[in-house]
Length: 220
Image (tube, rainbow, N blue to C red):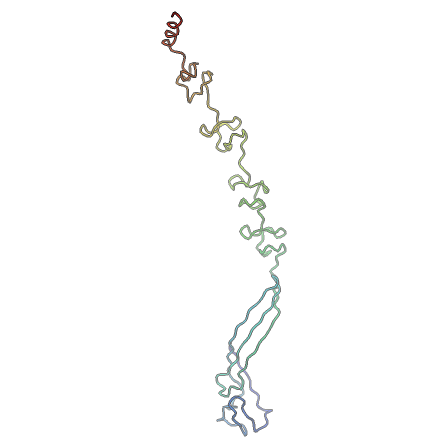
């Protein structure tokens, strides 16, 4: 930083020796660098510092600076300085200590997550508890944080199940394969789905040729 540094020479008793350059001055002089006929000097301050926050509202500060007066050729006013400070933050409260300030916290009494503006997500499903119909069981956003049900327990979720109350395979959209002719051969495997038949004939009735072969064999 920069500032003005006032020199007050009224209390000096001459002769005076400048500790910077070992020059002894007998009195005031416009031409001597010790006074230069000035009472004020431009001062330049450079340094480093840091703040260490011990809590969200309380911390320590340390800083070191070198102050120089470029216009004052004597260098008498050049010096190092160090400082320490106590720092306090006022106003920005965080009642639930979740890192989200109360003014930005939609759930200021309950610790939560920054991505949900300070509200919790107990089941970790990405739906904050305040919007979650099943806050302790993970579920998709599309179902308001609840898992999709599977009423018939067939492994096909109700949202994808064409027969939610009857178990069936996923290949048939959760419905059981039909057996239209009730012959024990499912329609998907039945060559004659509307006529009762036998498994060995792929759901079709025994052909006449088979009867003829059986009759011939019986006569032998």
